[in-house]
Length: 109
Image (cartoon, rainbow, N blue to C red; front, side, top):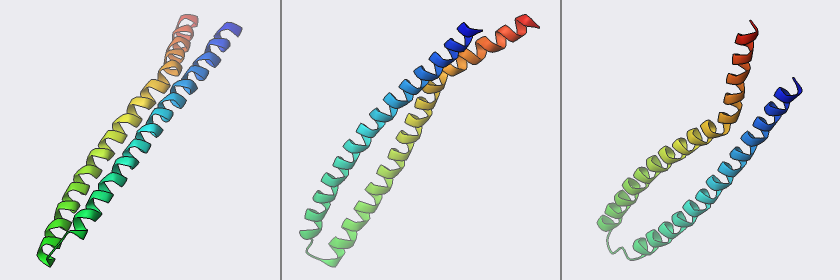
């Protein structure tokens, strides 16, 4: 029983390590995305400053809105996929211990 409990604790620790590592990687990605957003915003401000007519301004705003909408949809999709992948990877050690426990119960019964 002690060995089984030790295995459970090791699985929880491993799960925590995977989760921490994955969240650290995601944090780095968020920082890179934020830097890209600042660069894009800087370029947008320069474009707006160069506008010469109200029509050109409206067209530019439409371009920005379309681009930003597409970027938002892509970012949400990417983040959702990353969180699902991380959750599956982090839960894998615990899941295998649960399978082992179920097998032991089945054999005992």
